[in-house]
Image (tube, rainbow, N blue to C red; front, side, top):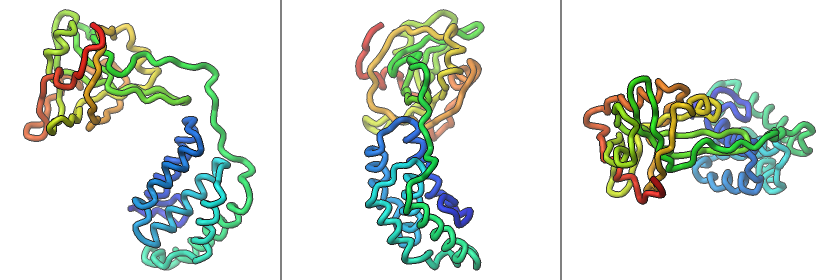
Length: 268
């Protein structure tokens, strides 16, 4: 784990904890759920006393920052702060222990009272509807060819809608049918009945909206559970074309029949 400084979130773990709490809060997730999720990660973070200090102070600070610090977590953090900064800070820098202690003393004062300016959740003025749903099969119109892709995941929250588009290797002169899609191949890892899709175009709502004239739903499928092994940010039609035509690395990734991912055909 990288330690960039003595501040509460100046470490990889501190950043991860802060982002998990704050970003989930901004996405409209309930405080009870957020607290439950972060406490469930305690054993993963608290591998020794040094990391326990980082974990509990980062958790308490992040919850204080959003204005929702439970009493039991506050008391836990204050107990750890009362023990003093861990001696391992001396291994980082000869001055780090004293500097860290000052940070902990400041945090202890902060935790004793509510944050006067907690982070606020921005409410969207309009409720956006997703362009597509998970399992939608899309024909993609390029300049002289068509491709076939499907929506493998939709990540929706009050602040964002993001789409993961899995690209088959199909390219042909005419608009594909569902039979063409089912008879295509896709870059995918396969372990017994577990699938890891190794092709992905990750679009935000706005960028995908600019391509709607090139996309047409030709059917919908129910997919077997599968993981996304590759997450590739995308924003243009060329990104989709590149993913379709990208050659799998020999020996590590192989092509499978797309229909192996399909549990059922919803409509066509």
